[in-house]
Image (cartoon, rainbow, N blue to C red; front, side):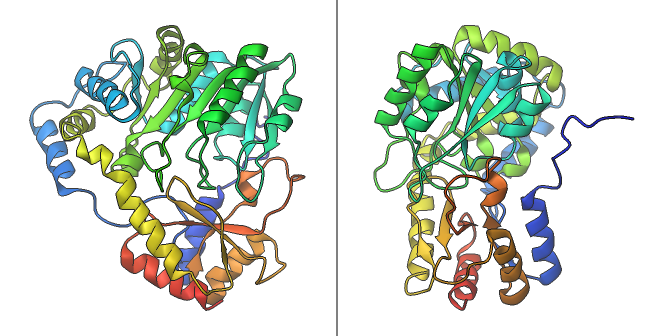
Length: 381
């Protein structure tokens, strides 16, 4: 009889909560995508590219002008020099890029450290490649790395550490000191890094995004994963990027070419033209900080508590003053009794033995009306 390679994988919590929200007619602030229109210019540029004949296979590494725009972004925003030809690969979304990076370096029996809670594709991707997931809990309530625990998790089989900054689902960010410590651990133990940075342009209160790719000791051992979906509110376009040094990019592309070969050509050309205006990158943090601040203000005076949020477009709400229910039970009841859908945090853990923090995740990449209605219903709890 056929034996599943992922026997414990079921329908994701995102699909479950969205289905519940639709059935109940609830306000949905659970899934991480905007509910407002994209810039009409992007739609026009997509149509222009298709009408202009860009409808066949794109180059395997990505359209050259788009890779050049990515290189320019790194110099402008992060002051990092990236070679467009040898260090940038366009991928069908960030999740695919994470898988390809893992597939390029993980062999059966290799161990991969993940910092929990974490994006739910990490563990299954390691599993299907024959690797071993070693979960380490982030410290609550700030959700920052516990470097002593990470050191303790390292063994002679450790191949890679996956980090995520700004963090989904917790809204925390790595500091420069965190990256220095990561470098010390990785260099000492010869460990690779996969850095999920899809929210790189969404940081708040003067916090500056710090990538391990900017660290001289980590550049040649790091895959950086980013995405246009979060940057330009186009999650349905599914276009991501892997940035890595020449040697790692060579190995990454060996996998990428057999997973997807290439990515939607007209969308790549549309994005390249759109990114010619750099303010579309630099204005993003201010746009989302206004939404974060508005939502946090709406929640003042309620029984909910607000966890720190220095990046991403997610806010954790503590419910320790409301109920002793599990997060999944409470999230379901919120949909049924109060008409608002949030995401519980426990499905983002593989190791359930860490310190429990009673919180739910809210996505504030929503219209002002959606946020107002969601906050109104949450305050009534």
